[in-house]
Image (spheres, one colour):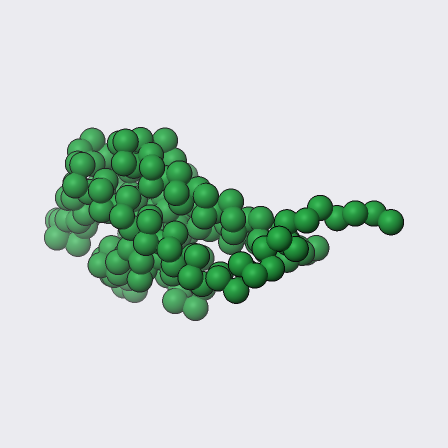
Length: 198
C-alpha cells in the first residue's frame, strides 16, 4: 500500500542494497557483527528484508535506523564510504526517517488487527482510527508538526518542500485506505452499533 502511494521504492531499494552489502559477504558480515559488539551496540546485526512479509520492511528500516551511525563508522573504518554515503545525505536521510516513522505506525496497525478473538467490528475500529491518524498526521505536517514522526524530527533540516511532499503522500495513503476498504461503507452503521444483551 505505502509504496505505491508514497513512492518508497527508491529508499527501500537503497536500504535493501545496504543490508545485502553487509550480510551477503561472509567476511564483511562477521566484521560488522564484531564491530557492533566492540562498540557495545544494542543490536548485533541488521535484518534481511522479505518481500513476502510486508511487515518486514518496517522492521528492516527500524533496525537500519537504529544502527545508522554504527554502519557509517564501520564502512569508514573499512575505507568503503561509498557503501553508506546515503546515510550521510540529509535529503535521503529525511525520506528514510519519514518512511521509518510511517512504517512503524503501519506495523502497529497490523499488530492490532491480528490475534485471537478479533471480530470484524474490532478490525473496522482499528482501520477507522488509523485513517483518522493519517488525516491528523497530514494536518500536523502542514503546520510543521513532527510529534508523531520522531525520527524525522531528529533530522535538522527537514525543509518545507519535503514536509509538503510527505503531507501529500499521507493524503494519498488515506485515499488508498478509503478505496481499498470501500466495501465496508454500506455496512458501517451495523459495525458501529453497540451490542445489546438480551
